[in-house]
Structures are given as structure tokens and as C-alpha cells.
Amino acid sequence: MIRHIIAVIATLLALWAMYYLYTLDKAVHKLDEIHRVVKASEIKVHLKKPTVVHEVTTAKENKQAAEEQLKAKQKELDKKLASLRNKAGNIAAFKVSKLYKQNCSSCHGVNGRGIIGPNLVGKSKEYILEQLHEFKTGKRKNYVMYGLLQKMDEDKLNKLSTEISTFKEKWDKYNNN
Ligand code: HEC
Image (cartoon, rainbow, N blue to C red; front, side, top):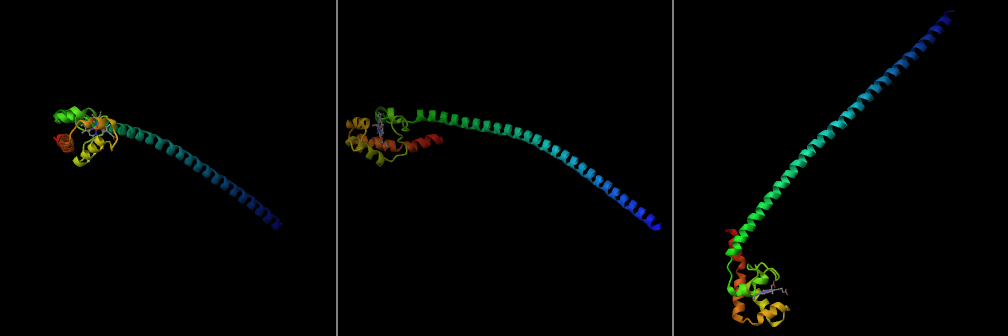
């Protein structure tokens, strides 16, 4: 009889333990669920906040960058304008000989910077004279320069080469004033 009672109690205890375990499992499950929900909500918050902040800062940054770019452009333009004004004044002040003006400036520019003909500024007297000789003799072939130089004697070629070789110095001096 006692055995039977013990067996019943044992079974009941076992059943209770199983039930207890079951409820524990449920609780754990619930905890997990809560954890998941919290995590999910955290993710949502995280996702929202940074994107908004990011957009705001990039919009600000873009605006700033655009403003800076504008300022830089304005500065560049001002600089260009100033240097143009400077140059316009300098060109007026840039005196050349009649010989150069009448024969050469139409193509090489009143300041030697070149129009149809190449820039002559910064080239040495020796180089220029040599080119003039070569154009004149036809060794360096250029119809215009050839025709033009036929009527010029050595003295003129020399004078022109000397004058043109001083253009750079003159130009620099005017530009620094
Ligand atoms: C009608 C236009 C024209 C006139 C006027 C003219 N030139 Fe030229 N000149 C040219 C051209 C174009 C060239 C380039 C020729 C070539 O590279 O073959 C040139 C080239 C030169 C070169 C060689 C430049 C180099 O870098 O090698 C010199 C120096 C030169 N000319 C000096 C003069 C002188 C000095 C006069 C005035 C006496 C003069 N030119 C008049 C058109 C002209």
C-alpha cells in the first residue's frame, strides 16, 4: 500500500516537475520574445536617427561646399579681371619700335604674345635671329615670313631680334607694377 502511495506521489512529483519545466520554458521564451522586440525597436531607432542626422549634415555640407566654391570662383574671377585690367593698361604702356609694329605686330601681337604667328616672348636674340635667317633663306619654310623678310637687311633683322628678346623682361616689369 505504502509503495503505491509513494509511486503515486513520485508520479505526481514527476508530472509537477515537467509542468514546472514547461512553465520555465515558456517564461524563457517570453523573455526571448521581449528581447527580440526590444532589439527590433532599437534597430528601428538606430536606422532612423543616423539617416536623418546624415541627411542634415550632408545638406549643410553641400551648402557650405557650394558657397565655398562660389566664393572661390568669385575670387578667381576678381583675380582674372584685375590681371586683365592690369594687362590692358600694360599693353597700352608696352612700347615697341615702329619697325616691329608695322611689320610684325599684326601676326605676333603688339606685345609679342602671338596672334596668327607664335608667341615670341621669352625667346633669345640668337634664336630669333637664326630663325629670321632661316626664313629669309628658305631653309625654314614659311611663305609669309619668307616674303616679309626679303626686303629686310641684316641691320633690321638684328634690331628686331634684339628688340623682341627684351619683350619678356619688359613684360615682366610691366606686370609687376
Ligand atoms: C602675316 C603674319 C606674320 C607676320 C607679319 C610676321 N610673322 Fe613671324 N611668323 C608667322 C608665322 C605663321 C610663324 C610660324 C611659322 C612656322 O612655324 O613655320 C612665324 C614665325 C616667326 C618666328 C619663329 C618663332 C619660333 O618660335 O620659332 C619668328 C622669330 C618670327 N616669326 C619673327 C617675326 C618678325 C621679326 C616679324 C616682323 C618682321 C614677323 N615675324 C612677322 C607669321 C608672321
